[in-house]
Length: 445
Image (cartoon, rainbow, N blue to C red; front, top):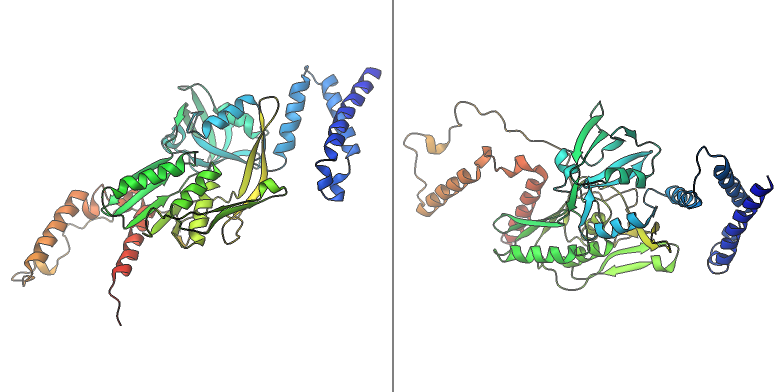
């Protein structure tokens, strides 16, 4: 009993010494009620610590107990603060460069379960059918309830080629789904681009990595080599976010001046402002930004900045609503603390936290299907016997050329019809065309 008492006194003394040593430099800056050293709380902690160390069914090392105490302390703050051991910290650093091992999903915690924020494009999770909003309740045969997010992520990681079965609950589906996924090395190409049709470009950002800003500029410049860009669709759907500076760089690429985003926290280092620099790479050509419930964090910074500056029309669904900034603070043991240190705000002062970005043009989740075709095609003027010719030879040739192109592209019923493949993208393209039609309309005096 004397040994246990001495141990508790030692633990209490160590914790008290830590608090006293930091009190002069840190606690003195806080409110008076924050300056009080929580003696009763420390006493309870030391009692529980000693009881576990002495009476738990199996021996537990002091290192594990202290690390678990730190994890619990951070996990109780918010879903995004966490303690990272050396291995997890190294994985985080690798992940921001665009290559890491696992399934390819961005996750958070909700009501004790792992929630999918977004699957990453061209990864095993996305190909297996995992969707934004899915709640993961089992990993193989292990229930997720009671696990920390770090423990769950660790279970989802593994050797490339190995399998894992995720049991997920999906909104609108009565029974849980079991989805088998084969792990792989995840190589994320953060920027993809193509021409939707002549003059209209498409750039998709799957996540925000350290070089994403440069990659977006390169992608747009490549599209411009194929002809003048009259409009651009910037696709941020199911983009879980990433590096803050990358979001600033992407926003800056389309803005000439003004505030992009600012952060505000309790300490001075958390108060930052980011402003745009001259040179809009599109020279004012219209932009439509596609978002959905899987667009989070850095995606919301870009959407919010372009929306506030009226530089782009935001189309789709309301975003996820992660408006907090996490700072990585390395620790002396090679690990790190990921700590929420600030909220970020759009140029107009809107906080996105737990609110999200609302689209200018809402589009609900829809699935288009071709209407059944009748046996006879509808009759047009050109089908009537002895119909008058148009009288414009150039117009006739243009119509014939358009019909050939329609046939080549699949026409209204073809497999290449964009509306059937991706309805929101098709609507974004139509909106860009409408903007340009209005811009080119002759003005009446």
